[in-house]
Length: 187
Image (tube, rainbow, N blue to C red; front, side, top):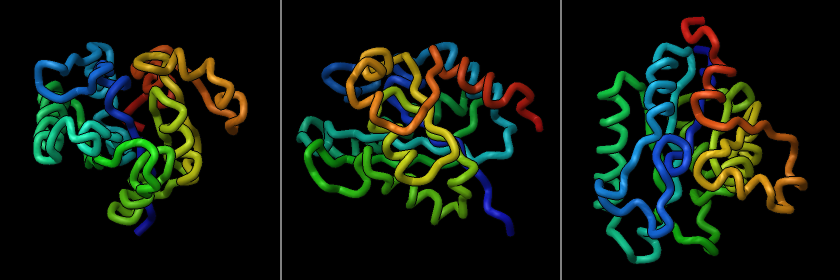
């Protein structure tokens, strides 16, 4: 059976708003309306759609892993309830500064997903709002890493590290990126 490509998506700053004190409860969740519509638009693409999200609030002791997983599931249920498709989700609870292989910029979540879902990373995309998202995608060997200017993206694009990374594409929003990548989502 041939391997399938994937569309990897970060969560916070990509389809929900980032929060400076972390997304720790449902009250902190605010969806980008364009993102929900865009995810519904691509529900039939021949790619696995996989969320890979660092949730350091767990590792920092600000919330339990159970709460983070439950909140993530509720967010994904909302996407699905709006006719979007998410095939899998990976959450890394490690705080910054650790060498945990799941924490982006390390590619652990993408590599785990590739193994579990038999994915072709060389034909896959990684979309995020942080340079660490791009680094994780590039380290995993994805075809293209994409930085959105939503969330932290605008500020991240100005960092010196941005000029040092292999070439990446930027889009104003998730909708812009997805409409460019999948103009005819049924193909």
